[in-house]
Image (cartoon, rainbow, N blue to C red; front, side):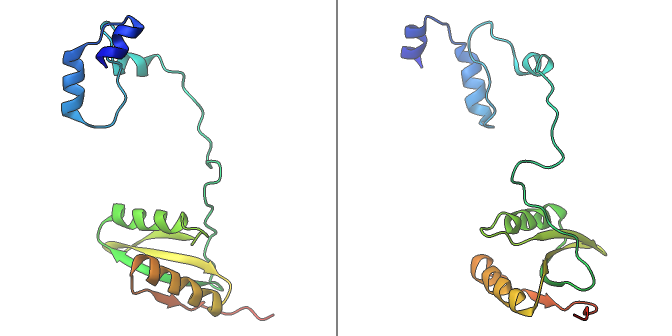
Length: 145
């Protein structure tokens, strides 16, 4: 950094660098003398509109009573349930999953799936990739074709 600052003819605030290194939070912060602080940068930042759906974000279909699904895991902690659902949704190929509030905890349910054969294949993948004992859930009622 000494060489770069000399080459670019700028002055680094080394006390600020020391504080940033101690903090080690991964947030980018300007380190030049007289550079604005993070609050000033944030206050002047252009506000961007965020889409409801991010580009290529997995879309998990609603579960219907006629769908097969899988109980992947149960958690006391909502964050842990959301982490697992997110990991499943970002598998290649995707395993559609969601967290569901259940009594005093949360369940991660994968699905919908078309049939028992598809469920068996996904159960095998989850067991292999996540080493979890999962439970297939039969449709509540079966549509006649």
